[in-house]
Image 1 (cartoon, each protein chain N blue to C red):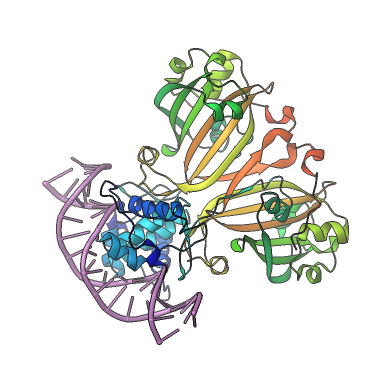
Image 2: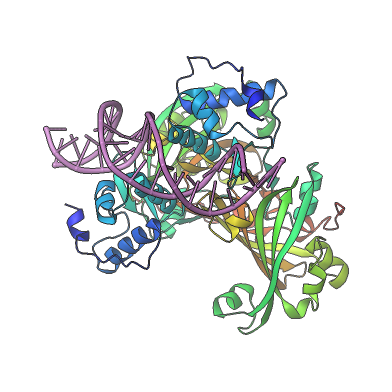
Length: 265
Length: 265
DNA sequence: AAGTGGTCTAGACCACCAC
DNA sequence: TGGTGGTCTAGACCACTTG
């Protein structure tokens, strides 16, 4: 019983709000070594009884702690204590696997599906290729310390890496495949990201309830020679990452143009 | 009465979920020209009656549409249709005002408070200055088209711009002040961002309920000569922006090192 | 099969905003 | 002051995960 570990915990009256009281409970469990990152919290019904409030009140509080990134949940399985965020530089980290390992954590990948399509006008212009160019699509689930953290959908120009689908059907890093099998090194070109709500099928694959907050990332990738190579879509858990961008690599003359502003009076 | 504009709208049975039905209602209102971006939706109680479900069900649906960025709310005032996201390159856009105006929208700023502090060890090392250095703090609310979209807290090295507080007490862009009054052009160095929940006082200033999803951005800024200048914290509405990062300005040799990976077996 | 979170109802009262 | 969203109650049943 998970709850037994929390049975005799204190619940100071001076903590007024329900989120604060739950946070205190969790902090105490952590301090006593009974709860570690990715460990499970007591159930909603237990909290309802223990705190003496309605279940909806407990759930509202859990949602707030979730939004802060303090706790997370697996769909219909339970609530868990969040591990530290993963630092990620999407403009620089060409290999997710390497970045994760460098931070002392364990990276994983699972191929969910593969397919193909031809580039439409919009995709073609963003990649700088001709419409109708064949693309390979690989949809993968990515893990940190065995927790699924984002779904990645890669669209790769087929002629640049024939036979990719077969090679991708393993758990090996795609960046490694590109380098070893095709001699291609990657470089990021453009990326866009915004907060959003995750919906199926991505939410399901991440074991999240649909509607959970997430982060949507689009990237366009070139090879080291500046030739267009692929674009990716990523659907991240909102609480798994901290984006870090180091602007130092930029050429000074490009970042400082037109600082002078037309003032909107 | 806002609701009158929606009174006779259709509500097809084939739309199964409540979020879909609300979205349909809004889309129809938009198509008929009765609802524009930043326009107000019918009240929760009206939707409760009109859709024939409990109010909590309506609210849950509104929260999901909010998480998607489709609608937003002002605290205790109502629900509104979201305007388009603002494209923002935090590594490059040294002036928020200029970026907003360039996208055909209206930028605004309001000084909330000013103050001062001395840099502690952590701040000093990240800025590359000595601990104890005096910093000026300016807390401002930033607007796009008269909607508050983020709170900005600037920490500026005092000796680099004496008298800044007096100059900042107007609504003029800070980047303009730095350039005109001190001859300083800015360049970004590092930035970090992650999704989070907004809490008071920032949530209050943004007219959001505390716990609303948001985006937290930290930035370190140099001048054009690479001398440390300031660091900023920004608390954004989650639905106001799309972050766009153009990596082209990077030096190739810095972005392509160490692609080879140690594979985590 | 038991336990978990997910959904939903039908109310009540509170805090705040705008008129 | 009336209307808005915000909070809360005390249940019920459903869908899924887990042992």
